[in-house]
Image 1 (cartoon, rainbow, N blue to C red):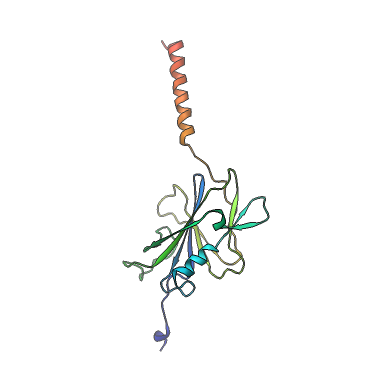
Image 2: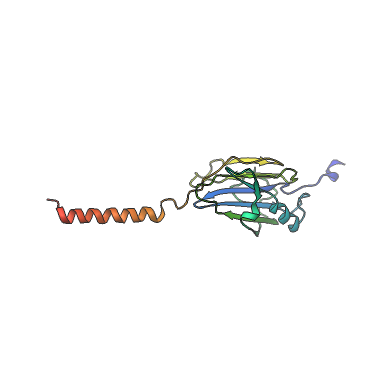
Length: 188
């Protein structure tokens, strides 16, 4: 009798991929609307994603909803993110799924440190992992299950620009300077 009463589910929590990119923070939150009792349809997924995080800024005592800082852009997907720290599931192999992903990109102020927090009373749990730029393939990612009232560590500041144009301009100035010295002094 037990097998008749059992039912399979999709992923019954949200998946949140976090990246600190040059000049911005990017979070992709994915909901599996297939067989998820907590998020049975797209409307429920959209609403859950909108209220999912609050952003705290270092030095301020308050938090603000993340969608007040930058909008969520929604996409439909059929495959889970390959970097998600989930064990292989043979029921997922070779078939498409009804996934909804909210993409959030926020540009914090220069030098600003921040953290993401799940509001107290939130009923939907979230598996968050951080993707590091330049990490070797196959290296396990750091992940954390966030439930009602949990918060991430303080992050940032987000590096703005990296090497970019400043490095190129400095190199050109150095080369012109060396050419000028060589043409005036001469090397013999």
